[in-house]
Image 1 (cartoon, rainbow, N blue to C red):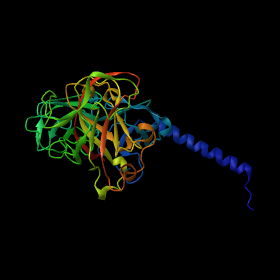
Image 2: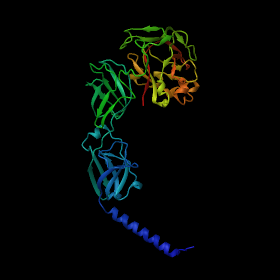
Image 3: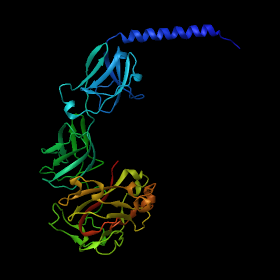
Image 4: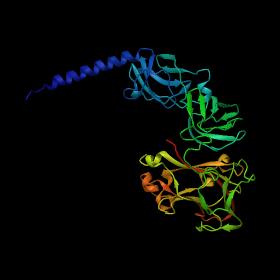
Length: 401
């Protein structure tokens, strides 16, 4: 066995430490310089970038970076970790940047502040293209104001409805998580809404479509599989913004106390015949790719109970829905407009909707994917509900991914 002299090893380690120390001293003496930006991900993504987005991890290439004390993107400080810095490379996450900064006087710059001097590198810092997660009313009419929810909804340059109809009235929030849009005249075609921002163009589909009839199971007009349970299928202008016939469920001059589960009495449900939730040849798709949608209008403020959504009257899996529980945003709980309810099929769970979701579509719907739908008002709380008048329309199952 070969043996090593301990004195030699000690001498070697000391020598290497001295060389590293000298290298660090030499690196720290250089003023900072940025020569390029790369993505901090494995191949093939670690290539040179032409722009970066807030939240993205990047590698700054250059020289003299060991002396870095702070890094700013568009004038906004990023969280700096010296342990991720070498003389020629610096790993850092682009910070969240407000729309004002993205278009401000320091826009499209990366600045390094260092003990050896500062440097400014001209480089595009743009938000990602808009991401849409939902639309407050997918079946809105021209002149209606809708709310589009998602991410990166700022620095908007254009909003175009299906058929190439551009909207001129829209406002965004500072956080970029929502925007309001007035549906333009002539917007009657179904499809995705195209939103263009400084970061690019994207469609609201598949997460949300405007006047989207994909997967329509019952609209109470030309696709009508209604069976029983409601006050009636009506066409009433008292539900502002309605279109054609819809189901009306509710009760008047009476109360439903907490714990009352008698959904089948008092016109408190909407039940369909058997309908094809998902096409037979798509039943092997992931259950998380789909959502049940419908438009709902709470004409009287809804303050208690839930609508339990049940396939095939089985009660094994159900999804509770109640706008007054979900969000305090007036655009969702308003009693003066229709709202699109979005219920992911993964929300259908055991334990009265609070347990385990079905593992696949066949478990939830049966092998054929054809089964009835029931929307049942149940007072699953302790608060008494006095009077209810709810409209339900456009029941559909949509592929959202």
